[in-house]
Image (cartoon, rainbow, N blue to C red; front, side, top):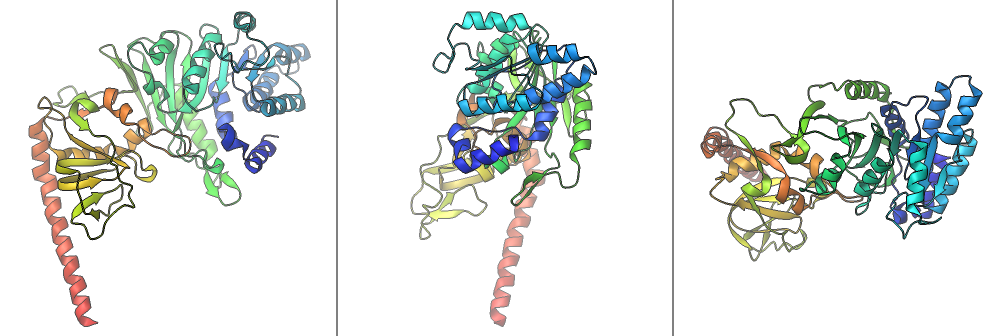
Length: 473
């Protein structure tokens, strides 16, 4: 039924119109396993879509009940709760539950957001609804909420509100969600006063590629108990899930790698295990300041410090010209997000700077050092030194930004069709390492200057080779 619904959505165009992003089957199963269901758990899905999570939970719970028909009936009648406000999805969820042995008793055709009066379809007596849900004592919530606007943070907050104390929330949503609202007194802090962030599992960028979406998502695990400043969070990087895109078939586990990948992931999460290059425990509070990407522990006697990106760099607005608006007859550099620079007849800057790609999906986080007159494209911003408090060698930080590019994009890239990095996400609270200017200068002299000389020599040799070839023709 789920596969049939995917086909229906793709052919009708409704997936794009509704901004529906369906959970791949192997991730749906993974999330239910991460919830560690017990036979007495009450499972709630506050945006159930076609009912995939609840169906998976129903199968596991009835299996745990073994041959006890009374318990199996209790599970169907009292241990599954679902909300959905899309009529097609709701009808499909009901059909799916019926075909899987039934569990429709507590499926509700309305929004689960108690303040969302415009979307509530049955009635708006939210206090009565909240009391009813709490009487059922939900202990596990597994959801894939809508990704547009404030929906991810709204559904996170509401899910925690429904759960029993020490209940678990497993949610897949855009990776930057908690960062977006982590300012002092913001929505993220309000959530963390009620729920502990246990783990964050970074998903592959191509997870939703068969739906024509490029979305930066992570699975977040919460326990409904206050997050303390000293609590550690396990960050797990699922860079590859073993699935490959096959034409006309979608993403397929062609080499049967997923089972081993999933087992390693579940073991690491359940035992809070660090695996080199894959998982790492970090605190998200330091000196009472929240950083939802986690603070990297620096060596005890290191000279470097963690500093906000916006305290080191002055960040311009993006350029005004599209990358196609070059002028081959111009004499000034026109820098886009590609390696090959173009030319233009005018310039916007005459300075030493880093041109930094924030809006080019295929080149996000690309840094390019420039010194002179140039114009950046509208896919880029310009980084210059902000103040004398943190003096910087821009050649050094050009290479530093390239070195952390993968992590920065993983932390900040956002969007449901085209990934970009918000300038506002960089400015207020993204931390990077600051090295003393003396260390920066030494690195440049020892490593970058020799590299630049070799690069120039290579360019001269290339020109020489081309001339030699031309003379032979």
